[in-house]
Length: 235
Image (cartoon, rainbow, N blue to C red):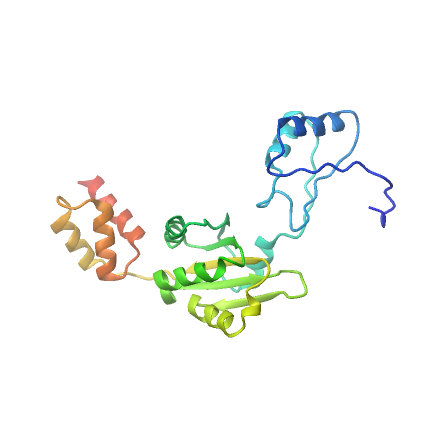
């Protein structure tokens, strides 16, 4: 602001803990004719960053809003990843608990585009290990680090290949990470899985049956669950 010679301005801290009273204060300031802007200390405001409730409140009060294009790690990582860019989904930060993390990853395996997440340096290794254990070479990854900063780097390949790079140099596991995953789609042979379904559909729950068939065939259990569920609905 000083460099732009904007003079002294009022600055309000706004974060996840800001309440209705704080939002109302900002609304009143703008209604009195002031002009304001919301900025983030990194990246684009509102992208995994507080601000949605404030913007919604401003809109409901008929206050004009202009959104300016700015740096966001989501798009920066996607365009530099080498993974498909024609279809993608951004899912914010990955869950902390392994059970929820596995569920999210399984859901992404049936998505026909690139899935993008933010991940922290103290969890990135565990996440890569889980992906390696569950999907092996079926998942193509890109781990983008410290984008637009001095130590920017991209790590591409399978989870195992990226883990090997981190193992060789522990200094790499520092900073801010964006994890991008693309699951290779294959034409699966469902013959064994379908035969298993016909024999056990009346005895085993679809969820358990999907897991069993997945263990035997290597086909993702979510794909099998959806397939078996469609069979049950037809019958």
